[in-house]
Amino acid sequence: MFNLVRSYLAGAAAGDNPWNADTLEWGTSSPPPVYNFLHVPIVEGQNALWDRSQPGPVVTGIRSDCREVLVTDVMDAEPHHREEFPRPSIWPFLCSVVTSAFFIGSIFTPWALPVAVVPLAVTLIGWFWPERNAPDSADERAARLREARA
Amino acid sequence: MSAGRRTLDVSALPNYAFGHQALVWWGSVGFMVIEGSMFVIVLIAYFYLRLQVSDWPPSLPNPAVGFGTANLLLVLVSCIPAALAKKAAERLDLKSVQLWLVILTLFGLGSVVLRAFEYPALNCRWDDNAYASITWLLLSLHTIHVATDVVDSGVLAALMFIGPVTERRLVDVAENSFYWYFIVLWWVPIYLTVYFAPRWL
Figure (cartoon, each protein chain N blue to C red):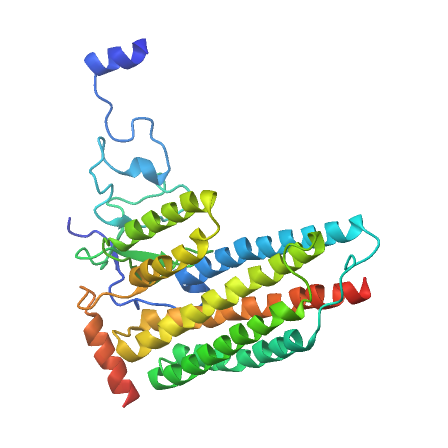
């Protein structure tokens, strides 16, 4: 505790990666920006930071206007495809409200199950159902599929 | 970006993948592990109860096998539309996906209807004794899975007609068939336990 207080009040601030660690979490600046890494770093050897050439190579081409992440192979971490995660939605919250009501209700009556099934199904389907005009230009791809079908 | 920095541009990579590369495949497998564990636990409970008494079923008639056997045949045949829906999804053939997904949903509905006839054929009430309770639990646990996947297939089929259909939604179709196989496969040991453990053991 003494060390914590003393370090907070006085002494030199630690720079980036003060003990020259080799793992990726030390590869960002200190204090880290909220997004951690502007670009996904590419690991070049067994020791991620020690084996890194300067400047370290990075991944580009991941969209920043939606929640797109890079999916790699399980074994070799070779980039395989890009996966877009859904945008924020009210449905998971509604689903959790129904689930909580179901669990609490089932303490008092077994009828909670048949009563809860319908709103639970509605919230799960609403959660699953894809958005129209999502920023991934879903409509363009839907049109492409329609052409393929024709 | 500083000049000369080496980069790997991934913007040309596809934005979907089928099979074990797809994140939803891992979700399905995780779900199978959880639900499979549930089936195993209930089966263990069934055979534990069996070991506690000399008569099985205790002072109750055997279940009638007709509807259960019909359901086994029905779900085994339903793997054909499931496989065809999966293949159609993998070649992004929306028209075939629509056809086979509707047929798969109808097979699933048929299985749920047959299941309604299986309960009276158990020849016991759920609260008769421990045998009756575990039999009802085993059958109901599987019924919940069948019913859930019928809703899944129905919603996916509706989406295939209403849209927007993207490649990633076709990945969902393939994973739906994958999960249906899991439910069908589990019906084999559960069917044997519910209908033949009282006769053979």
